[in-house]
Image (cartoon, rainbow, N blue to C red; front, side, top):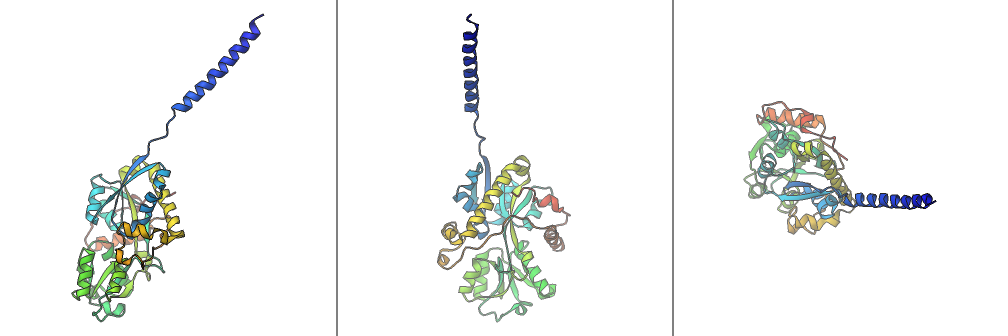
Length: 322
């Protein structure tokens, strides 16, 4: 006669045990630790979305622990990623190709910045006393460039597209932008290819734009690049990173001047331009096309900077975009 009450008591105990077990199991589940990403960045306008993503907590939102490593030069940046001391960088396709000439070390995963018909990234500036008022004046004129970089590639391609022959081009290798600016100002260089905000500074010193990349924007862009080892080990983290960058781009493009102070604080733009320089717009997700890649490859091989063939799919990876 005690069977039913005992069964009811046992049922209650069993249910309570199951609930407690479930609660206990739930309590032991811990979220995955954030994936660490070491990001080596030059202080240029191209990297603003990556800095804003940090500033706005977007990396944390996507369970990433991003450490931004400031670098002072492109060689330092490339050395860090080649040595495994950085997981990601902002660079250009020439840099990707040089890093990958012996083995595939890195892959471009997104545009960082692109020229458009309305917004230049680079301009060929003619000095105040050079007597150059348009692109025709650049024939035979000494033009300061950074050899073996996007700047030399872009200058060459822009002038070729304007009908110049190799004999019309007189490039002078001046790696450091401040030196290029100084030589342009002194008249030792007739012209120089410069990025913003140095274009604006050169204009203030009397220089004029002889040609810029708004006429042929397909040649002018920078990229976000990850090490192949990091991509292979953490593909989801790369997509999470790019998702955070995408959200940062949306924030900047929606309200550019909100991030003017960040631009100045991070030394992307010199303080004297704080009031006048406008925050640029940034591209939404995308990667360089195969045609763009092959054009750069053809150029670096023709110049003798590279002797090996490289495949687009080994160097550019668009599959990780959100």
